[in-house]
Image (cartoon, rainbow, N blue to C red; front, side, top):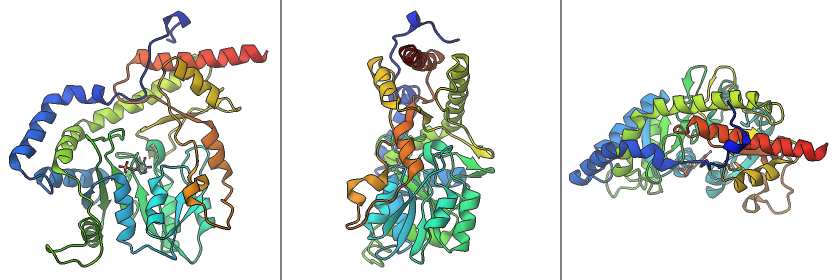
Length: 388
Ligand SMILES: *Cc1c(COP(=O)(O)O)cnc(C)c1O
């Protein structure tokens, strides 16, 4: 039940990483000390184990650890020789590194619009953006739900485009039972602490079905060097260290339960918004047919220009929330091309003005969800009174 107004006033954090990690303290300690005792801080058995496990999770034959999700995207494009003169189709409504990876290699990120319901890249917009210079497309599985991979793969195959999946927010998600990361040529994972599988710092991984591509990815992530001091290509140094891998191996065992709890929280939100009679005043996120959503974020839309006022209201009541993402990438200063106006991406721009992400982390308790929904209800009721 929704709490009465008198019951409110307890703060709710957007994220509480220590709350998730605390019960696993001893397991972390044992795993990390094992690495310390072994002295194998890079490419140790913990790294190999994590690569094997993530390949299984993603339904791929190979996985290659690297230093971050951003590096995974960069290395994946490097291994395809993407560079000046090439175009890479990306959504604009995403985190920075989806596009910066292409930009840094001298390629041009071509920003396209999203589907307003899923927030994910629109397959029709991909089709429209293809030119003879298009080499790759990077669908992002935003907020924990996969992009329309069956259709995107069909378009990509037809036009011989490389597909790099940005799976940073969607480890464990799937479409038609096929996991995120297994659809495209490479899947890029992030172990940033707030992702569904978060480490104790930065970390990332690339997954692929193709063993030759896996070798190239590993080559580019290790200075193009094989064996030692023989450099075949100019790569970078991007490694996943064994301490991260050891901690992640501990957390991976608990990922199915953590995902279940996120899904449960999403269901509970739906019910609480309905009970409060405000499920039509905001737009609640949905999980598409044939999609397994893993809810890295629970992102509502607040229409009617009220998003910022609601965010302020929640801020005053110490209810955690965030705006992912307030400025679309096609409008960022760093991506402007001299003499060209930025494209007009109406759905992206509308989403950036309306979205609000609410706490969804696995260990949230019922009272916290009720506080979140109750405070949103108060705001909407107050607005309605002042409009009347
Ligand atoms: C987090 C994230 C990244 C980058 O991952 P890092 O490990 O932080 O470098 C890339 N794309 C998306 C969509 C992300 O959410």
